[in-house]
Image 1 (cartoon, helix red, strand yellow):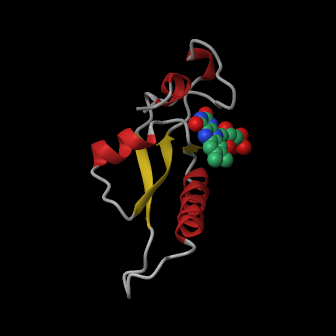
Image 2 (cartoon, rainbow, N blue to C red):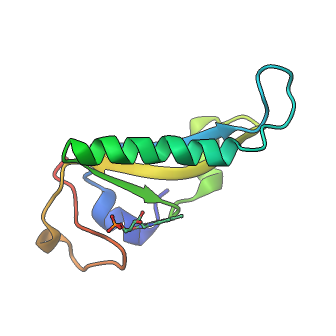
Image 3 (cartoon, helix red, strand yellow):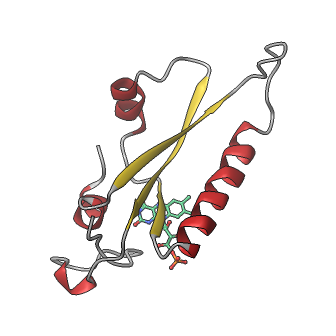
Length: 108
Ligand SMILES: Cc1cc2nc3c(=O)[nH]c(=O)nc-3n(C[C@H](O)[C@H](O)[C@H](O)COP(=O)(O)O)c2cc1C
């Protein structure tokens, strides 16, 4: 479900995470107005911690959102926000060509 450019470098990532947020509050079902903002904050913490551990943590919007929702069974009322590739840094020279924005491939 990744775009071809993202497949080039993300195919060896150890983990691909799809970030999903809930649009309403558990408490009373009212709109959670900051659900995307909160998911963004969580993603940033993941990126910072991963970076501290020497990992590549790369956020992406280049994937098929509808397909992700379908394959993962994301129910109505939840928003598919982004995908994150996590892995150890690979060698950029191993990429067939360097897509714009890509920093390198992954070892695992
Ligand atoms: C909203 C958003 C969507 C992005 N989508 C992609 C993507 O689909 N593929 C990709 O290679 N980089 C994507 N990027 C860029 C990377 O996440 C990253 O920001 C960029 O490679 C620069 O990283 P660096 O500042 O650590 O070098 C996206 C960035 C943002 C903010």
